[in-house]
Image 1 (cartoon, rainbow, N blue to C red):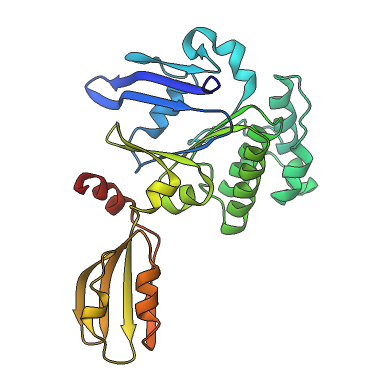
Image 2 (image 1 turned 30 degrees about the horizontal axis):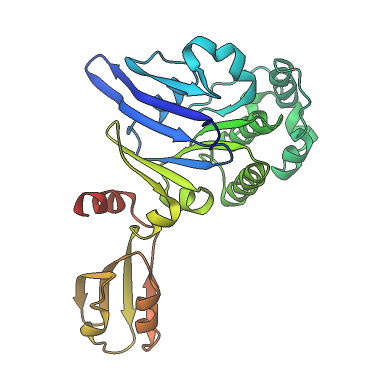
Length: 296
């Protein structure tokens, strides 16, 4: 196996007595789309700032491309594209000037710049405007283009879909998958389980500054907890829905509320025998999925 692109050993950061991240051990190989998943305040942004040498660890170490980030960051930063969680941009620059200014530090052809600009529907007129005139979503698109335009070997992205509408989220996902197909590596933080499931190969679950699980997405899917609410047009047999993958939460008249873990097909097969008035099946609950790790 090749040397990992990212490796952390006992990586720890405390802010006084407050824990940011503690004893983080990660190893991310080349060509992997890694989702770093957790609720806000879990330690995701702290980890990213440590990887980017914006913070000094309390203890432990982080390596990128086999080099200690604290000692060798100057030699590795040119191979990294970054989308920060809190955007602070040069507000007086135009969008176009900003992209070219950021590219000038690397002295490398921005091979994806024009393609990404077109994909994210930023017009020539948009790019002539000062960034302070941009909406939140436009700023986010500009940050993504800046991070990806030179096709760096590693992308580190902190909640990159924040502020994007559904269409532009799909553009982001498309280019991240395209990027991965070229053998590049992505470290992608998110609090959205469905988003990570859609594009990532592996996931690290972090909570209260502690890594609680490392999973392949295929394994995580088996533990994902979904809540389903069904309103039937007819009477139903409660016994039909006492399955290995379901837990009944509530049932009254023609309404049934249950949770589903893993494979939903046995439940769908049972539902197909009934006439249904309405069914609500929202995104899987991150909190419930976390709790499943403590129960197993």
